[in-house]
Length: 199
Image (cartoon, rainbow, N blue to C red; front, side, top):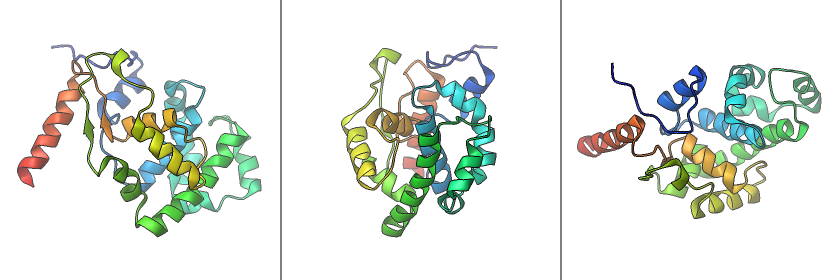
């Protein structure tokens, strides 16, 4: 059986491999899932993404499966209770920001109809197909992530610096940053071409 070539940042950890193969870079247009990634990327700040992935199931349970309306209603008492839970990253600023960001998402939905429509307008609604030959060519931020970060902050979002925004863009498929030798890079290109053929 031929061994699949993956992006060099992927470790041998099964959780990481599965995330890379099935989620990273796959287009997400669901508000709840986009909110989940936004919160998890913020929680990751200063830590490894694998640490967050290993706590993801606990996050989903503790944060009501990231139903925006529910998280937006969390009280100070609820936040204090979350900070006692060892299954998540117990940083008060990060937990508090998750609640504030939920409220900000609701405001965006009122203005744009959906959070997805707002988020994806930064890339004109379509995945940006990059052709990175190596991991070293992948930037930590771009002009688009700078623009997104600035606008999110203006709307009251927290933990949305440009680097976090670009990681978010990669995760939800706004950009295809699988390196060209990775089997997922070509898979994303094929999916894009099939959409063109059927449109």
